[in-house]
Image (cartoon, rainbow, N blue to C red; front, side):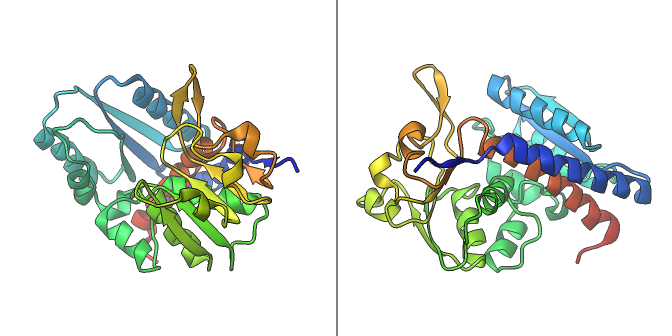
Length: 286
């Protein structure tokens, strides 16, 4: 068996074409384009590149973007004052704090400060709580992209055993809640899990999001499983995921590459969230 390669770039491009039409309709109706404001602190090249790629993708679908680039020694007070200003601006619909933040700025305090209707990351207490209650509004972009990729693989989620490696509030936990809402049986594994392979070998849907190169080996994967690799790290001078791609693709039914799998879908879902946030603010909560 050789797995179907789940091309996140192609899928994101197709979704962007559809989104562009929806953005144009919103702009014509409300006489304002959805706007995404990104806040970047410091000079980290990867963060800067990621923010720029988001801005380019936004422009292609008609979403206006603003980037606020702050010095690395910006105080928490100054950062939160900018968030307050963006909360008040009617022409800004989505606020995106680029992570990681420097040590003097607490990410939790930032997400607690963001207006939940502008929280396109879906990480504010209000949006995280709604997801946990099964009443989601704005959902973290990477878990949303994971779900779209699983559907694209043709996998039946209902009744399937799903294993997620990684329990972060950004990926692992919200992904588990989304799969649970689709009636999967979900196991979350993490650094304290005993005998990780015993869990992963049961999974019809396997998601890994820990950032440990080639953690998931061929013998850890159930034949025919759908494997979603969210990992992103460097090994041997190149970008790699959590999954030993070349070996695992020989037993899985579908697999995401790194790069070109989950990453493009994260940006596509972020843009979906920006339009959803703009609709919340212009048309009221559902």
